[in-house]
Length: 326
Image (cartoon, rainbow, N blue to C red; front, side):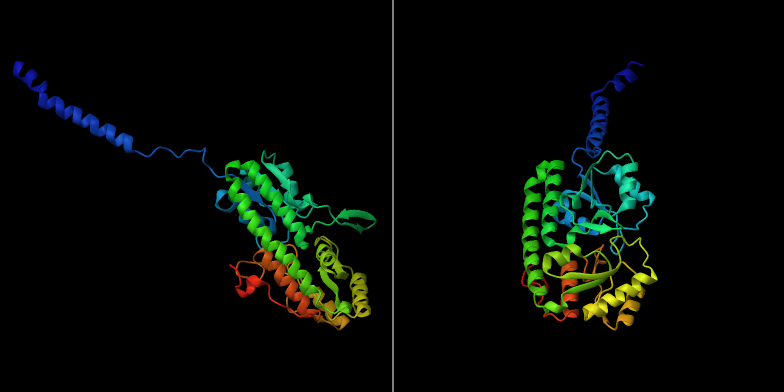
């Protein structure tokens, strides 16, 4: 009995037991700890595709960004889905156009009780007030003037800095580079439009989305099938009136838009005896990935090319198209 007790208390037995404990502690210490939540990237949600493009350029890899509207989606008539409500509820910042461009999403955002900070990016611009049915309505298509886009990009930069001040230097660097490109784009568009014969500087499109573009770059909107919102439906009288306006103005071509069924504007072109431009205009949305309009800059370049070529101007590619710059 004494020998058994002595055996249990022998130095060898104690060393084995201590070794087992130490190995267990070592394994525990090597088990990965749960990830810290303090280093999560700010969650940013944007509505329109143009705002999404700008946000990703300014924010880079330092934000967790979700864009709600897919390329080609019409913000005027978009109907939110449950996933949109979840995105709003989980966001730290929501960036939307405003001026009622995306009425369904704005209604959802206001009803969801979200605690995220909200910025109506388009509303940092003083709008053009258009007369519709005797009422003054702000035109939401503010990005048509690239100078406005610069102001909106800088507004996105500023709110991201407030959200994540430790990334201020990166946000400012990204914005400065992008604004330089936008400033060059603005001047390039002016030069391109100036090549169109003055009598041809008239724009006819499916809906009234190009007032900012025409006023900034020296064109005139001769007529549209519908007003600012694609929710409208043109009457037979409206179609007849537009055909007569086109004939009187003697425009060489009119334009369809990528987010709207072109069938009716094709009929207008046939009845007016004018060409329908082979290149559609990007109005309320960027194009699908890989298309000519899959970024804001490319969209504006594509629209300018379509207008210049169809209205008799002389098109010269934007430097980024020729590979002069990265």
